[in-house]
Image (spheres, rainbow, N blue to C red):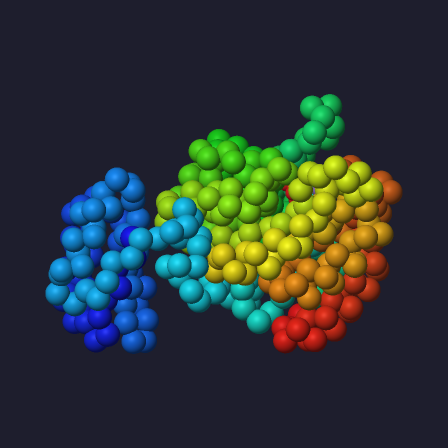
Amino acid sequence: MIIVMQEGAARREIEDVMHEIERLGYKAHPIYGVERTVIGAIGDERGKARLQMLETSPGVESVIPILKPYKLAGKELHKEKTLVQVSPAVVFGGPRIQVIAGPCSVEGLDQICETAMAVKTAGASVPRGGAYKPRSSPYAFQGLEEEGLKMLAAARTQSGLPIDTEVMKESVLDLVASYTDIIQIGARNMQNYDLLKAVGQARKPVLLKRGLANTIAEWLLSAEYIMAQGNMNVILCERGIRTFESATRNTLDLSAVAVLKRESHLPVVVDPSHGTGHAEYVEAMALAAIAAGADGLMIEVHPNPHEAWSDGSQSLTPDAFAALMQKARAVAVAVGREL
Ligand code: PEP
Ligand code: MN
């Protein structure tokens, strides 16, 4: 339910309503606007009738049901865009397009540091690399784990930029969170609800990738799991979905960007690397994503894609990445953004 307070409602009246919401067993999420305050009451749907009674409380103008199931991730309660602050200089959702770039896997200290510096020079703001890898085959390289995190930490120090890496299980969440600035939830874990609840309790930005076969509504409900635990710093990442098409690894759903802009206030990033699976298609889709209104990109870059331990076929060389960034900058400016 959304409790809309009257214009100029007294502070005391707002507090009383919030106390009553909490007394009824709901969480109160106030949004203080310039003209009026609205309060979201989040909790068990069954107590709706009792919340409706708040309509008679002093200072309340109306009580409106929230129609969408994703109450915190949706726009009904929160119209303004959410800004996710990753570091003092890196904010997702603002005018500047943020670019996360780096290898699929951390393979060694030199490899990750060299790539981080190369993507920084080209204008990326968040180096990335996987230390825990969700591979389709159990016989494929699974990641360097904590050793990889230490190498990422060195790349973080050397570049002076915040980093992003994936966490696959709750048992290493604290460890991963102690190294990274953005906690990535991979496509395969988008509906791992216990993991989502756990990152919801972490106080770090979360990059939530779309599941391989999930609808936008399911994706937003996964964001809701994180936000319901109190972590509002969620960045959504479209990375392609399974369709009948086999010319590309996945079908990059760029229309999701437009839908999410309508449905949610959260920043949206597009990953054309996993989205297409082919280095050759990455630039075109990256430019299209910015034109469509994405707040950021995730691009896989490797110093020598032919020798990459994972996802070499979709990884760009540092030179190809720098060329992409030049064009991306022009598209960003054309749509009123910065890069
Ligand atoms: C990744 O970003 O390294 C990754 C594994 O992506 P996804 O979860 O989208 O497959
Ligand atoms: Mn990858």
